[in-house]
Image (tube, rainbow, N blue to C red; front, top):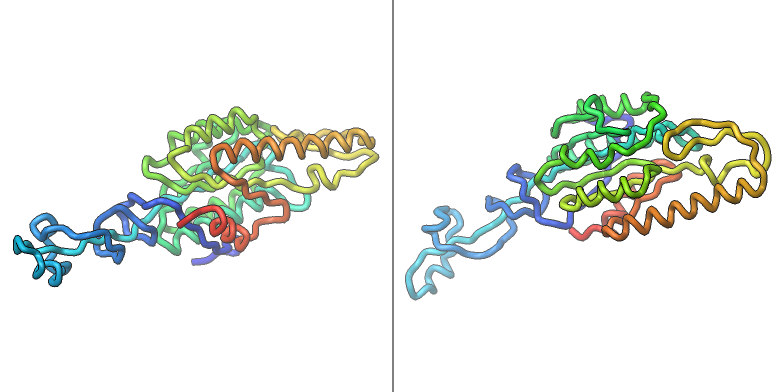
Length: 287
């Protein structure tokens, strides 16, 4: 089942899954897969279908040996989405519209490889009315994406990110962290420390209309970078330059923090492009 917002991309994980359910990722679980990992006596793994006749005939102790294989397993996939006030910004693009596309696309892409998908939303706290249960079924994720597209967030910050950690699985997961990352950097770092057992893909939603395409002179509306509150200001050349410098400084600080945890940011200013995300995984995530 596809949806107008869903755009398939290909992702990879750089570890062996511990998932017990069948999927398409390399796994540590023994099973009927094709990933050969060694031999064992038949008495230890009583599966006559896997008997290795050549090794058995050569064994001086006349033991019967079987080949051991790992199955391919599923891995949990999450979209953790910022619902703070700044995510309501609409300029060249609407941030929550892009978040909706990412949500539908991640759910659809996960379903194609039998990975369970979960959505968790947060603003100044974890929003339990914006949470879904892990599932390979798409209807719930698509409904969440439709809600996102029409959502008008309150003018609050995104400090609830660090509270997301207890809601994540014990099993290592792939997390798409969708945000404009305007929350205080100490809050972000606290969350990253708590998520270290998982692999986080920071999906940074910025918009050129927030800073690059502001007029150099005249009355305009600007949005508070944390709460989303809109203010009317009179821009002069020096103020315009300060805004550009502040965003450049923020980008450098954000990138430096994420790279300390080996998490290259995926910046989006021109909408969501699934092929670019696929390329991100080929470049930065070793399968």
